[in-house]
Amino acid sequence: MVVRGFDTIVVGLHSTGTFIVDQHAHQDPTRAALIEAGLLVRELWISYFSFGGNLSQLEVDAYLKGHFDIPVFDRDVLAAAANELLKDASSAMQVPNSTGSQAFMPDDDGRRMLGAAGAFLLSAAEVESERLDSVTRTHLLDTPGEERFDRITRQAKNHFKVSTATIALIDDRRQFLKSMVGNVSQNMPRQISFCNATIRNAGPLIVNDARTDPRFKANPLVLGEPYIRFYAGHPLQGLRGWTVGTLCIIDQNPRNFSPEDEQTLRELAVSAEQEINT
Image (cartoon, rainbow, N blue to C red; front, side, top):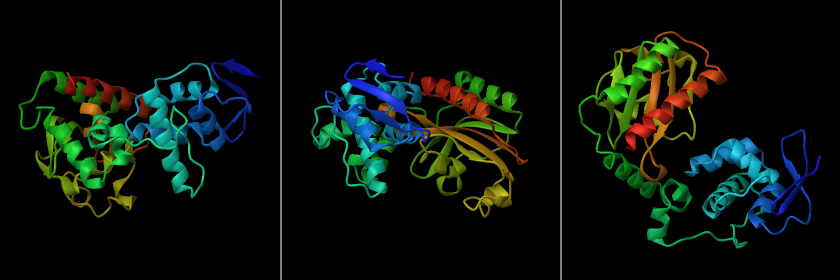
């Protein structure tokens, strides 16, 4: 079926999930180049999300199909995300930004104004500095518990029937628990925290059985109290899209975690983000 929308004509969809575009799709260079690159929609969206993009996977999919347009900013973030994937694949192809140029390189102030969407333009040290600044700007570190956060952790614990649920902020050295239902130490060193791994993820981090997971099986929180076996954490975004912490659930028994479970965790994380950014 041929779908006509805006400047692109989508001719079909490969069984692999890549899109084919008509050769006349030239008026939106970003869309045309993205489709020509043959990237899977989910793969592209995950990269885009990790760069600080806020569109859903369905919206990115619809944009590529030509059903509707998206802001110039998001087109440029998609281009940057795609180029990162293409670089990892050792491809010589480059996706242009919305103006058709190859470069998307604002000055230093402009790079920081982009927030997490401009993380690819910053060094690792600069990225962490911006993230820590966003944590500080929440004004939540070392503050007392609040019902608006406790309501979310209670809901998470009860829904998933786990021993512990937390909302944590991660600064340069520790994990501060803004809300906790269960038995986890306050101000845990960042280096051993499972949540320290979660804040590096674009999406949830699921550990079905920590005893068999090579990343965590030697962790002191697995070998000793609280004897973590199952962990599911979702990153929480603060100012300008930087990840400031996590919503996580913990249990002392291994378990599976379904796509429906992931969706519920994501919805609870959105609620936590709304409270953080209020």
